[in-house]
Amino acid sequence: MGRDAAKEARKRGSTMSDAQSSEYVSKMSDMCLQRTSYWKDSDERGNERLDKLVQIEAEHLEIERGKEEDRDMALDLDSLNPLQRTVIERKQKAIVARWCREE
Image (tube, rainbow, N blue to C red; front, side, top):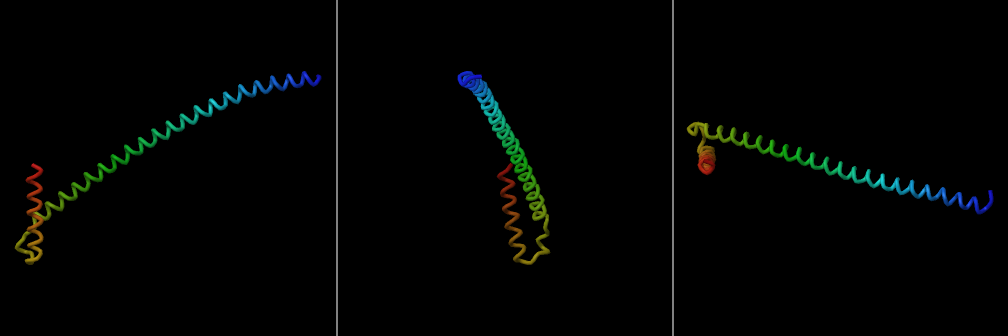
């Protein structure tokens, strides 16, 4: 094989290599797009879970507040000292006002 034949063979080989490399770049680009799409979906699902947890926590706090309000409303004011009675009376008035606004 002479020099010209060897040169021609290298050119043909590099042409195949160019086609393979462009195919490789195309596949890598597709994989990158798929990965980005997967991350976006994962983030959205994670955000949905966090929103649900926040909603559950808010409901839990509302229930706890309701229990505390019920306890404050059920207290016997005659058994309290004057300072405690004043504090509880103010709480009861605030609770009644909030209940009236909510209805």
